Image (tube, rainbow, N blue to C red; front, side, top):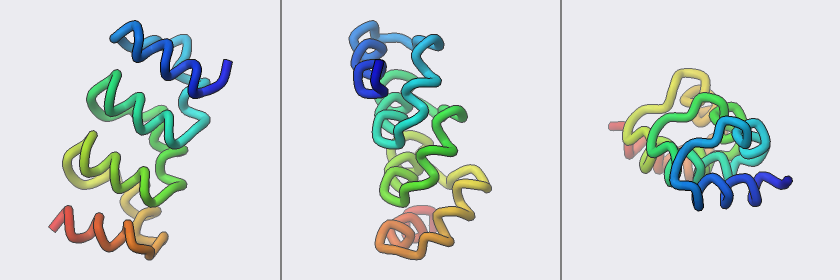
Length: 93
């Protein structure tokens, strides 16, 4: 099963599906949407993958956590130093 298939299965069920979470956590895009649409909050298992992509880290901070990222994600975001880093810094001010 792919991360996309696992995400859609969980979304369709309308609840967390722990047996699918490891699969979903391997992809930043689907990890972000799983946290946003299914968990509707912070999802620590997906954070290491999400943190590798500035745009998803920013979206995660803005639309899921609705605030500052956990320290390891925050530090990674600052090191990215790209347009999403600028959006993130403006957002957390």
